[in-house]
Image (tube, rainbow, N blue to C red; front, side, top):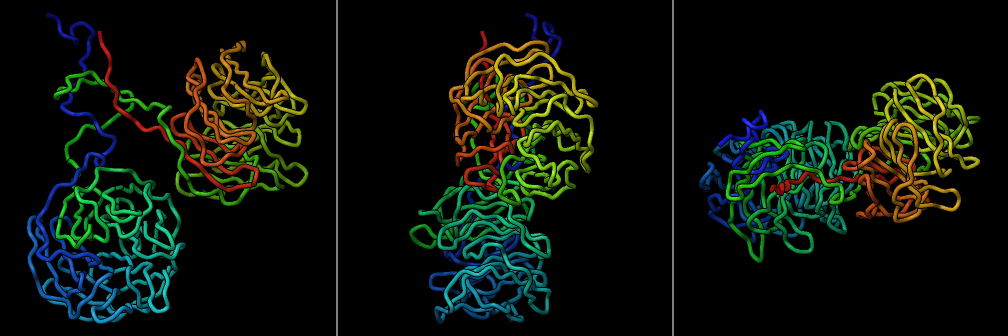
Length: 599
């Protein structure tokens, strides 16, 4: 019998398990050796195979233990009982600081240094506090972050740095909180989770000078365990309204859900060199526990590539394909735009987007890298006499185009990744015109005022008029390329659901949208996969698959805005009105594995 290669000329890859998108996603928790003394609100430091725990309770203790990768051994005690403190360093060179003493409810600023054998009292922090976070490279380089000050009573944002001889106050966190986690060093650190008056998911990054807000955790919680660095961290366990086992990994940009702990618990201790290898120990369920769990990501795994087809040779014995189904996507909060605006235009990818122009006499434009906005050189045609908003935009952050805008204009500018250049105008001035394509092959359709059906093509140098839309409209949704595009919705007036597709020479009416809307966001690099969201204002999201529109998960807030970028599987929406907002939302369709039906 001929095999597949003999028939088709190539092999189908055979895998023993489904591929994964990254090494950490293949990680799982396994049981380790129990502590000798069950406890929570303790300090801890080190790695998965060489960790230390000190203090904790209840009642608070001075006991310390070392872990060697399989078992805990009791070692010399702290000079005094302590709990709810922070710690950093290694199992042979660590520092513990702050917390509550065993003698009373007020917290302390005291610090103790471990040299692998004994503890020594060292200079105290400037601010006494408990339920704080911290980390560091050794007993001479640690950072203290946040916490609870009693008295007076309240969460603090204070940050201090220890250099082996003294503590120095540095810039505060943006959000004061207690029971948070911290991973990293004195010059590159990550603070996440915690509690203010409520549980929070806030993530902040320390660069050695100041804290910057980044993407939130998926689950807001306090009293969580930690391990890793500022670019490769884990957050696990903690308290929402109940104890949780959730584990999340940080890759320097965003948080991803991983396999859960076996035991849901709060105020546990964590250690680890990165998100690939961590240790969870102690904590509280309905009582203090001694459980230890080890998180390990596989060193040998199959990398997931979108669109790959393979045969799973495990018990499933099935042909499979990796795909990114847009209907399964959801919206999540991104970093707010620098100011509340509406009518800006956008282009590029979700994590590499450009936004420019606006409803004020401004030349500002900004790029987005998936976590932060950066001010860029301003446009040329955005002076008080030529201020414009709701223009068409298309291209990438390295090569983009903006054309038209309100009030009625024909201006065109190109962006080369560092500056704007005025180029040839459109043949007709227009605003609210939807544009698609690349910096050398673009298309703009419709617009106002009055309502237009005219379509123009951009070749990288000039605009050429081509076949008109069948239905004149402005503020439509659209996606695709210069020779293969779709335009739907918008306003004639009134608002319409009418949809048309473009084949490079003519427009054809096809299935209508489900909801009539105007001036919303849209994203789609191909005409058979386009996302339309917001508008009018509305929170609705619809997906065009080349044949029909399907309603998907809504935005978190109704708004109309032109601030869009990305593709149907990874889209961006920022600013909008009414009311005017700086909010940013990110649409993500997760990569999944589907079984291929064969016959």
